Length: 97
Image (cartoon, rainbow, N blue to C red):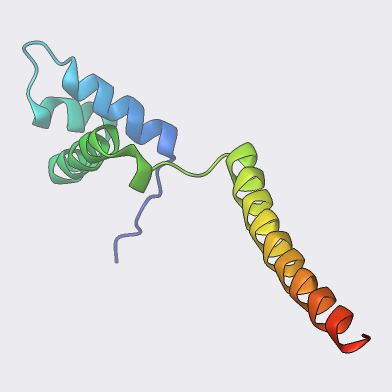
């Protein structure tokens, strides 16, 4: 049984860079030098190109972006609560007359 190797994202990106800047070398030569299957290298290239063309689907959210998203949700929640309280205050003001 052949054990699958896991490659880091950095390794994959560097492999794709080598592939894109290969000059006269073939995909097979580059894959052999890296110790990966040429088909796997080709799949990494396709995934990399998709990520470059449509980064919103492939790029992880930064901590700042996550915080901004969380704060926007909190602001929306607070606005809704404020509207409910305004309506409740109006209702109870009319009832107390």
